[in-house]
Every structure is written in structure tokens, then in C-alpha cells.
Length: 177
Image 1: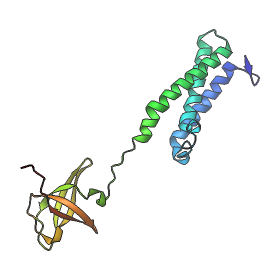
Image 2: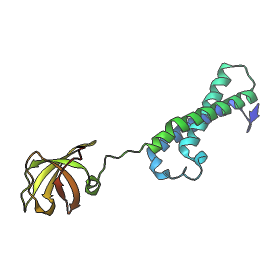
Image 3: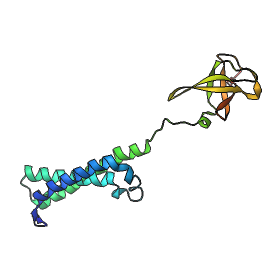
Image 4: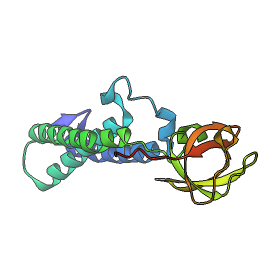
């Protein structure tokens, strides 16, 4: 079978090389096309380039390794590329897109957390607290809520954050009697 005056076998290798180079370029410059696939996921370069690469790979290998007809090899290659691309998209790309995790936090997001006093907080002054998060231990400046003093080692509840100073109150856990 011929296509564009070339045998299918002569067509697979250049397509494979070009798709491979395009995939490598996409890896380096994917931020430029960040939202390209949001409207039409099938036209997302992260989906389209693997499909073309996988189809060309299967076609080239089958042309070299089997005596099947070129038309049948093209159909098998398209089916194999589509199936593998489907698996890549639904089992790797989608979970990665939805699993974006950031270790960034804001001071306001720490309100409501429990911390521990490591430098006593005087009535009209500042002390220091530590907050244990999944990102590690954070040390912050703190002041007592309504200017109440808080001793070393006490657990405190972060009420609010005012200009980088954490306003805290001694933590009283709820207990059943």
C-alpha cells in the first residue's frame, strides 16, 4: 500500500521521529500550551503526541516484524495507539492533573489550628508558638487574645492573624464528663 507516493513503512519512521522530537519539545515548552487541552481534551498535545508516536511505533514495528498487509497494519496500529493513549490519559494524565498539591500556605489558612507555646506570651507583649503541619514545623510570633498571658508549653488555638502576629488563646479541648 502506498500513501503520498511512499510505502507505509517509509512513512512510519519519519512520523515516529518527528512525533518524538515534538514530544521532547513539548516536555520543555509545555507551559506555553498550558490550557490548550481544556476545551477539547482530544486536541491536548499531551494526548495527541503520544497517540501519533504510539501509532507510528506500532506501525513501524509491525511492518518490519510481520508479513501482514499495510492496510491491516495501519488499522492495528491506530487501534493500539488509541487504546494505549486512552490508558495513558485516564490512568496517568487525569490523576496527575487532579493531584496538584502545593506546600504553600498563607498565615490566614493557619487560623483555627492548635499550636504550642515555646516562648511565654506576656500580657502586653509577644511570645512564640510552633505549629505542626504536613509541611513541617512552623515557628511564628504570637500575642495573647485580649492580652491574656500564656505560659510555656501550653497548647493554644490560633484565633486570627494580624499583620504577621498570631493572636492565640489557651486551648481547652472539649471533654465529655
